[in-house]
View 1 (tube, one colour):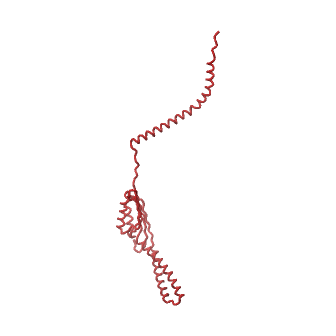
View 2 (cartoon, helix red, strand yellow):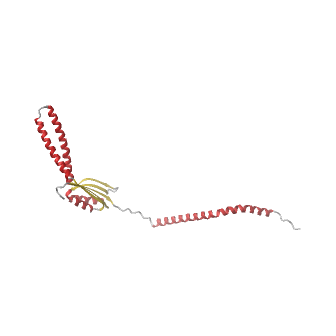
View 3 (cartoon, rainbow, N blue to C red):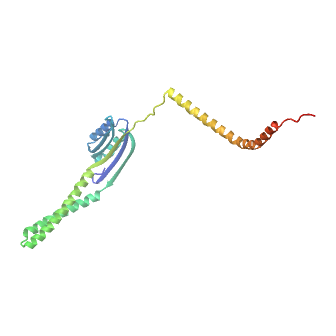
Length: 232
């Protein structure tokens, strides 16, 4: 990397591991190897007290940023990784120049203040001096921030647990009972549907037969009751 260029590099690495605590320790080894530090950390545990997730914000020297990212990818199963780099060389030079100009301006105003004789001149010069000192303080903060961001890169690492959940298999007896129950229920439903189908098909004929059969039955019954005519 060109030492004259000023670059702000950031990266994110998402990992999955069966043992999050062990992966967290390996991340720390990578940080130590590249002379970095853990700036922030948010780690959670499950009901058993085991580490279930971890999120770390790392700061590593910008010159070793790429190597650190590659090493972090190998700590556990890689889910996702991304990096961005922004060249801020022009911004750094601009802020440095403005800081130097502002400092020279303050020195000139301080000389004017030493030579001022009237109260009005002193008040006016002091107001100008205060304003320029505030502007210089703001520029120096920007200068410090850029220096920090270009010297140390930021990498956010998140680690989640990967544990396969196995569904409990039913016991042989339970499985046989449930299978038999399901089969019996299906048979009952099938029989009921068949009976209903047959009944629906026969019912119209049964009604017609009933309407025709009742008068015939009544006539037959009346004929049986009539006394036989004696032979002459």
